[in-house]
Image (cartoon, rainbow, N blue to C red; front, top):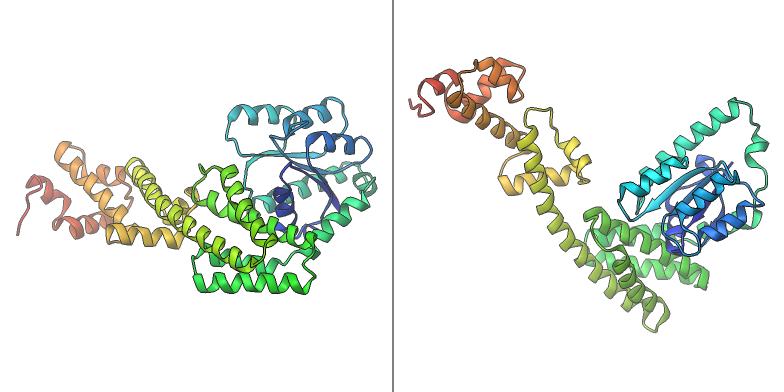
Length: 373
């Protein structure tokens, strides 16, 4: 097993990361969760880890300062991942200078984390082939830290929290109410201890913030966290807890729905610009949805709702309109124009032109765009 240390001054981030994936199945073990760079630094004086995932902004010692010190003092050659809410190139450049493996903006997704671990596993295998033994890579494990990470997973009602998060994302009142009941029933059956509540609320926080940032990466994560803290922790620590949590969950679902509405408008504006600039390229709905972090099916629905046509038809109309403009404003050959607007097949271009303009490109040019039967 490759050992991992998580370093963040926000406990819910660390707990969220610890349960985001099944670390053991991927060959990793969380052996330490440190609240700041200073605590991590002291730990590394006596223990070895293989991977460090650290926040960039923490009290006592930041993630960058921790990275600098362990590299300059040759304290650890662990792979190092910086997490940050600040998209600033200077931070990234400094991190890379000190052999940082990657620099990721929070909140990190399950796919990103899995991809990072795959790269670490591959690097570890290469390092092992170069002469380091398995014992070299796994000495000085911290049983206490490992147990802590394991207990967090055992205390987590993952299925119930995931169901509640999905219901909140879909703004489904019936499922939200049922989801809160399911979570409380499960926590009560486990004893409703402080550790159980903390683990599950932290995991809920992690996912709710992730949903908001996926819709709008400019949202103030600290403000959202404060809002969640004030409402969720009140909900689990006061009388009438289910009612309080249900009220919060319904309110947050409305907030996400509003973000989604605004994000939809913003995304379409950006994609319109993209198409106008790059209509001749091989643009696909799948590629654009990946670039702008929107579900492919959802993006297709947005196009139909706004333009009353599919994405493919919208792209064709942009291309043909551009071709029509070139036919009237230039003397270029029709084949050249077809290629310039993204059509390599001349017959297909002519057919699409006839479908949209009612005549062939040649006749359209001869009649200066005023062709009638």
